[in-house]
Length: 434
Image (cartoon, rainbow, N blue to C red; front, side, top):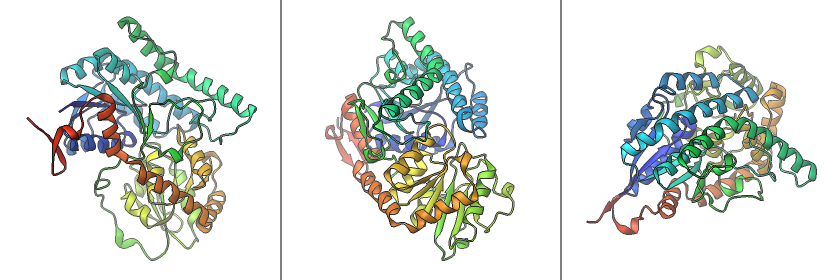
């Protein structure tokens, strides 16, 4: 049995899929430990996994949580810059504390979120094999595609390639504090020094939660990337209470701005105004960013909850209105539900652009969203069958991708952890033979 360590940002959009992957690794007989900045989340302990803190005194849990909380109220470039500033502080803490605690835990391999940029250096310092996992949109740079923070569609034209290169160069400047910390640390250890952010990820295996169908055509896709689709627990998400008795017979519209950048209360009101008067019932999940009662009386009297059973509601929905977080979009695609995307920041514009590009919905930048514009988009997506047909094509690709079980199998194979061929399967676990 191998002991696999997981490094990822301590936020639900990264933790939830990593828990599903950890569960798949455990099912195959491996011990799994999470190494996290910030306060230990109860969801990890409740799932039966060990948690080891990473921040020490360099980036204390209280400081980390305060920075994450601040991120929830920021938008656009300010939010992106703040995200990467958190990444720079995280890099400093992980590089200083990570090797000691990972070594002490007795880990034999690491699985590192793409957004945990220094994790690969910890693995290299300790001589451990590691795999990179993209729980957000694929971060790998490629001048053939627009950067993930833009709303641009791919264009095979000279001006588009120049535009892309300029935007990627600007993003590299924002990455510089993180890359510099990693370079300096590796230089002191005599390790190979990455020239840019693309060289901090695994050269053995990089796994993406996206299905390949949900990615722009690329020219510089690393050969070690595998698209397997979303990571979900076999039984779906943990049960969430919901007032099902409030639903009526009208078609359902589900709206969520995720669990992180969701403190923009005005957007929830715009969504309610846009859906008021349509032959549909609106359900809003505020994601704990805004208390439902703080929204007051909304037009159309939608059902408003702080957290919702997302997959169950999406299966009943005619469409979803979303901030274009990857997990919400993939949940919608997995149920064949078309979307209207209102991206706020970070990689959300790029995800929304892919929703539009694949034909599974429409996108409106949140700075341009009005009740009238959103209503028009909702009406179009509801009434035109091609949007749902495109979402169903992505659904079929997700079902074929293999998800967390396929990712766990690839990690075993590429990192040399042994496979279930070496063990006797008993129930749902792999029990090592003596």
